[in-house]
Image 1 (cartoon, rainbow, N blue to C red):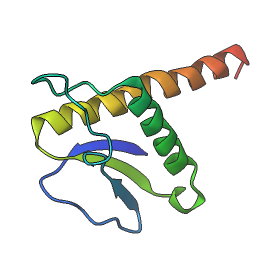
Image 2: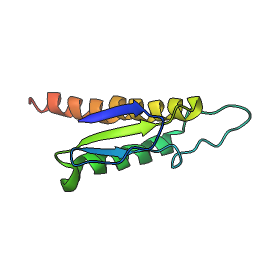
Image 3: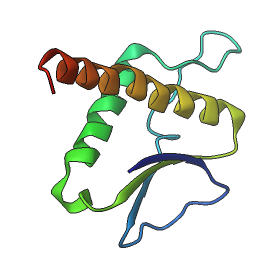
Image 4: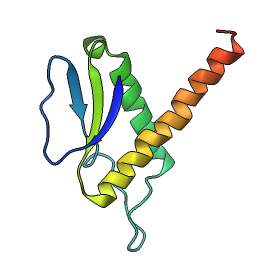
Length: 102
């Protein structure tokens, strides 16, 4: 029920789908002429935000789509966020399930 998309324009959420974007929320503060990746504090904040959406009663039956723009810098940082979420949060829950015998 979690999706990642690159879109040209801002979509409107529907009865079945909730769209959200973090392009202007999690901004990399560059050191020189680089553009990322985002730091671990931002990844943590993103994971908390996404977990809240996934556990929200009002979003229970909706697809949740994290979308980003075609801007290469924003797109790569958004990919780091959702990839980091998949790697840390989802893996941890899988490990907990396996260790509890589920």
